[in-house]
Amino acid sequence: MAEKIKLTFLGTGSAIPTARRNHLAMLLQYKAETILIDCGEGAQRQFRKAKLNPCKITKILISHWHGDHILGLPGLLQTLNLNGYNGDLTIYGPKGSKTEFKEKISPYLNFYWKTSKQQGNQFNIIVKEIDEDIIFENDDFSIKSAEMDHGCPTVAYSFTTKKKNRLDKTKLAKLKLPNSPLIGELIKGKTVKINGKKINGKNLMYTEPQKKVTFILDTKINDNAINLAKESDLLISEATHSADEQETAEKYGHLTSVDAAKIAKKAKAKKLALIHLSQRYDEIPKIISNEAKKVFSNVIVPEDLDRLEL
Ligand SMILES: [Zn+2]
Ligand SMILES: [Zn+2]
Image (cartoon, rainbow, N blue to C red; front, side):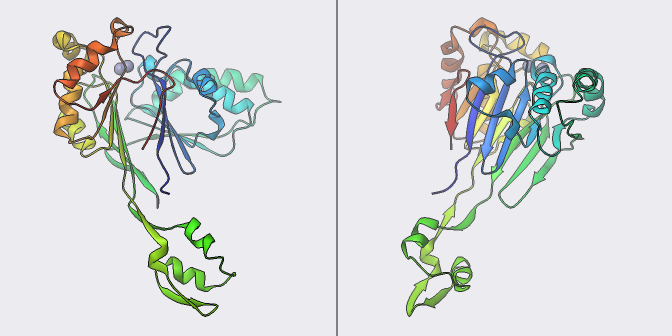
């Protein structure tokens, strides 16, 4: 079976948190990778509620440095330190991230880490300011970013797995083959003879399809968002405002429910998840989803700690 992308909506709220919605944070797990997208205040407690271990984080992607997206960082990093986080941790963010980190986060860490010398391992944090396009790539997936329009340096991210031919390990195990260097040839899709039995490697292979998730956080509607989200299996987008508040949305550099749905439609995404709802719609998310559904049918409004797999 193909490995799935697992998403956990740790926080789905906007600038002001509510009892129902924490500040923004999302977690993407795929194979050995655990990527945190934004880290609003209280994100580390949401990990606990979701029974997830923050020490498994391999990368942090920051959309921009407004408080509701980053104020969870000092506490989270402090916890990782106390729990003996292993290795270096890279935080990706838009232009200016190095200064933002130095001014907004480092003072806390200097204080905590100096006063807890016996406890933590004081791991290395690398802050990478990213340009547009692919910011990370390996054999299994790539992460791309694009500049958004929010009045301060802001980026959106997409995560795309690679289409791959893979060996079906269950099928291979059923053949009960003895250890042989010829198994390596099977994996290449070749036909080999083991114990007098002719086995076609191609019959043991399956194609893992490409999957794409795009994260559009705070921004006005713009073409980069549509291009980045092209053919996403899942587009996770902010929808701070209702369609009635178009003017306010534009003034503060945010999307309305209908803006987000337009991006999903133009990008030919398969599914749209709306987050970063203003506290006005906290108890009535249906207003936001119903408006969006008039433009794009496959819409969900996740609650905190909801999970999705694709
Ligand atoms: Zn925000
Ligand atoms: Zn913002």
